[in-house]
Amino acid sequence: MSERPAPSFAVTAASLLRNERAVDAARLCASGLQYYPDYAGGYILLAQAYDALGQPEDARLIREEIGRRFAYVVAETAPVVAPVPAPVPEPVPVPVAAPVPVPVAAPVAAPTRVPLLVLIDTAPLSTDQRIIKSSSVRLIPGLEYTSLRFEGMRSRGRREIAHLSEPPAFREFHTMRRTTRPAEQPREPKRSVSLEELAHRLEKARMPRQPVEVAQSLAPAPQPGSGPTVVTETIARIYMQQGNFERAIEAFRTLQAAKPEKHTHFEQLIAECERARA
Image (tube, helix red, strand yellow):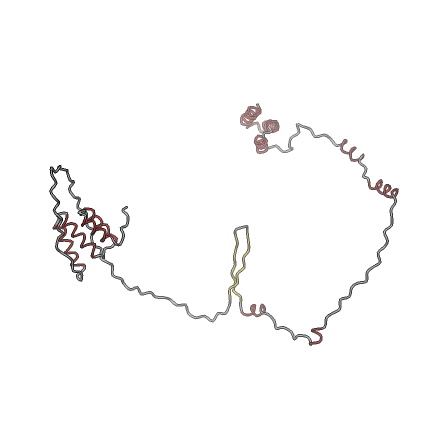
């Protein structure tokens, strides 16, 4: 996409024509008129560029378009005479590419502005004096539920601030109440405790540990191979995921004995546990 030319592209095109760069001037004018179609000077310079390129028919069409679109603009219709170059001794023939005609953008007719009529529906006046109250309930973090309810005039009257009672008399209002402190009870003097009495209290506070140790020794030791009372395939697979393959194999063998119809299935799982254990 070509870069948008500056609004003063006609000034640049005029300097290009003076420097015998008619092709660049024609391209600049054509691209500028695409963005500024109401610029009369751009059409005039484009016609002059076509005259300099030796295309009088295209220049004539552009001047006719200027006269049709800009009737109030007096365009200079005389073609630009290119200066005759000075004779150069021993000219070297240089192949020159034929100038590529630049297509002229078709003039875009400005759309006429049609006034728009907007019909606004007005709501009828209502004598409803109720107000809407909302209350939000937080269901989970980030999700709240808001309920709306109409509050009538009666409930609004109950919510209004009641009138204040009459203030007390001036003397009673400024009279400071005396604060009465409760009488302090006399503190009992601290009684000194001998070391023998402290030692006797410490002996009473000691907990006997021998029955606890005996109870622990009498408790039955847990059997290492005992599994859960209820064995299911889910529990056995959990043992596999935890890496306890001994328990998993034992559970699968129990299921294999309880469900003979799945003997092959449990045999495959037992083999898988043995491979993982190895």
